[in-house]
Image 1 (spheres, rainbow, N blue to C red):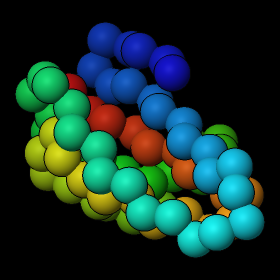
Image 2 (image 1 turned 180 degrees about the horizontal axis):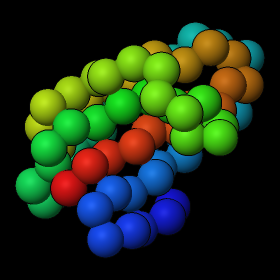
Image 3 (image 1 turned 90 degrees about the vertical axis):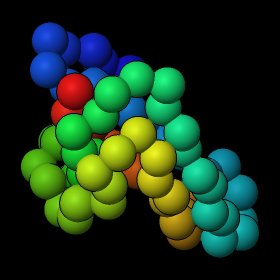
Amino acid sequence: MFVGKFHIILRFYNASDDFEETKISLDFDVKEAWLTKLNEEKKEKISDSGEFEIKFKPWEIETVLVKK
């Protein structure tokens, strides 16, 4: 996890052979959350709040950029 003045980078890893889905709930104000590439280039906006879901393929890493 990287914490900057205006954003946080979160990385999640599915360490299984199964497709997985998880719900994330952050306990602070969030302006928006984005799925990004590993280099943190934005791919898809996933939330305008501190709650969002992530779907994983087997053995997949997902990176989320959270703007405070």
